[in-house]
Length: 306
Image 1 (cartoon, rainbow, N blue to C red):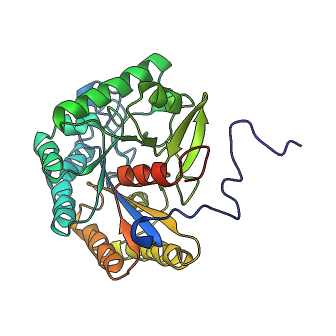
Image 2 (cartoon, rainbow, N blue to C red):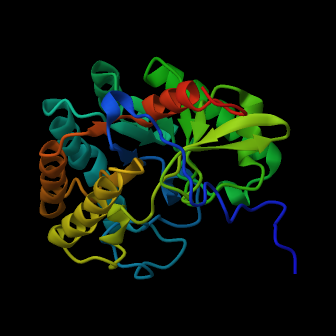
C-alpha cells in the first residue's frame, strides 16, 4: 500500500509546526469572518431552478422545486437588511478586525453595505461572484466567474479582494485558476490545519489560510447546535484550547459568521460574548485574513526560512 497520495497531504507540519511569530509575541491569532451572501444565492427570480434554503430557518423541502420559497427569500433578506448591520456595528464600535467574505453580487445588490465596508476599510475576501457551486462549473465558466467577481468588487468597494473562498468546496482546478488570475494573496479553500501553509500550484508557491466548518455558526440552523449559548460554549472551548497550546505552539483560530444567522437577535449575543472573552486575554492578535497572509509571507516565505 502506498504511503503517499499524489494530491493529498496527510502529514502537514506533523509534530514540529513552525512558530508563526505573530506580532507582539501573540500566542494566538484570531480571524473572524463574516460571510455576506444575501442577494447572491440561487433564486427562481434570478433564473435558477429553486430557492436557496441553506443556512436559514426555512423548512427544507416544504416548497417544491420550481416554486419560489418566499419564506426562504425573506430570511435571506433579513441578513442583508438587518443582520449585517447588527454585526457590522458591533465590530466597528469595538474596533475589532473583521474579514468580510462576500459574494460579489451580494454587494452589488446592497450598495449601502458596500459603502459601509469601504468606509470602515474592512478586510475583503471573495466568496465568488454568486453563492454558487464551483465544482459543478466548466473551466471556462469558473474562470469567467473569478474574473467578473474581482471586477465587481473593484466597482462596488473600490478595491479588489485579496483572498478567495469557494462555497462549500472548490473544484479541482479552482486553485490553479486563482494563481492564473494573479490577484490573490491566498485562498481559504481548506479546513486542514490551525496554521497557514504553502502549496505548489504547477510550480508556483501559493498560500492557503484554512477556514472552518467547526467554529462556524452554520451549526445553528443546521441543528448541530441549538442556541446562542451552545455556540458560545463551542467556540469558547476552541479558544481556550488553542490559547493554552499557544504557550508552546502558537496557533490560529478562525470563527465563521453569517449575517442571516448570527445577525438574528437570539444568536447575536454569542458573538458579543465571544469578543468579551477574547478581550480579557493578553497575547491574542485579532486580525483579518489578509494581514495573516502578509505576515506569513514575511515570516515564512516559501522554500526557505527568514
